[in-house]
Image 1 (cartoon, each protein chain N blue to C red):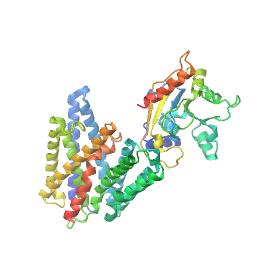
Image 2: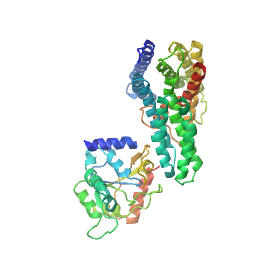
Image 3: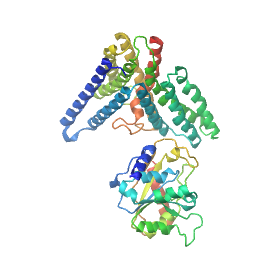
Image 4: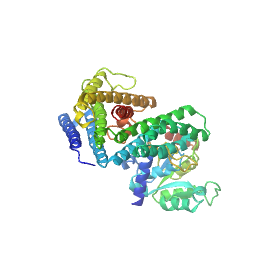
Length: 198
Length: 312
């Protein structure tokens, strides 16, 4: 109830329209999007149909979201985020393990393969995590999402929002080809997002 | 608010007109059967949206002068939102925009509400004019600086300054017309919007020759004259609700329809420049808020000042 209200408020504030359930492939899926603002995962989360929203978890950097108690509460308790290691990756802290575990539990994921928020408006090279997860779970549909204007609403490094109209576009789901190489797949995934920008 | 039978007459007229439009749309839909054309579907959506807009407008006006100020303040806010969204600004403008949305816009309407004529007429042309480039310069980004500054200033002038002159009509003290300004506001909005609607209707019925085909192929010579003349006729016939004589009401109506046309044309040019058909999607069948109020932008300040100079 609180979450539905929060999702509605976020959609109104960012000018985002809800995604119809029939536009999405059956769960679990991985939504991957361009990244420029804190609003990115929040708006994807808010645009999802309520049933899907409850079972969709944003993937976020542990270093950033565990820095303060408030961030931790927001990420863990409210959005049920999958926090992954970005800085000191070891076998024990393999960032892929919690993502694969979440998919196995039937949850969908929201990922930003650029790894961090882009400050210049460009969609940067994708990091390889998306490929490795796709390789480990080839049955999972990969849904490209293009987010527009959210960095103008809340840019990186600012705390005051400006109420512009954002938009969220969802593309055709992708699947990893049987013998597709890592660079080819990552390039194709990035182009799928870029294509939605036009 | 005092009970004003003339205001009831005006409202009943609008409701009657809308009811008639709904009946006509219904008949058109029935006649077309399952294969109702796009035009009819759009007409249906437009008429339904008109019912909602009229209800909101009526409720705001019934709530008194503050209701009108708040309503048009929100209209400005949403219009500014659509306008700036379409206008490419840069990260260096972020705080400037924050000021525009959360300080300049509310302040402009606050000044209108407190009837401070001397300041609300210069707040944006003078003080926001200085504030906007200063705040952006402080952010230290000189790329396309003049362009960005001009765009934000323009957005504020059109969406906030010009539109704020609609509720400002309530602040005019016209001798012999005290306490009746709601009817003046009603007259203004009715004539401008009716001219818009009638230009659309005449254009659809017999439009052949586009006036400025490169900007708006839907604005035709036939639609223009049909709309302008019929809306002027309606405006003239409403002289009893205004502080004007019948011929003054006629002249004002004619002027309003012209200014409405100019406003719509200029806002279309901006849309075309940005490569979009509508400013937004908030109002079903119409597009965005900006698409509905484009004709009010130029008409409001001109009407306000002319009435002020000639009648107070």
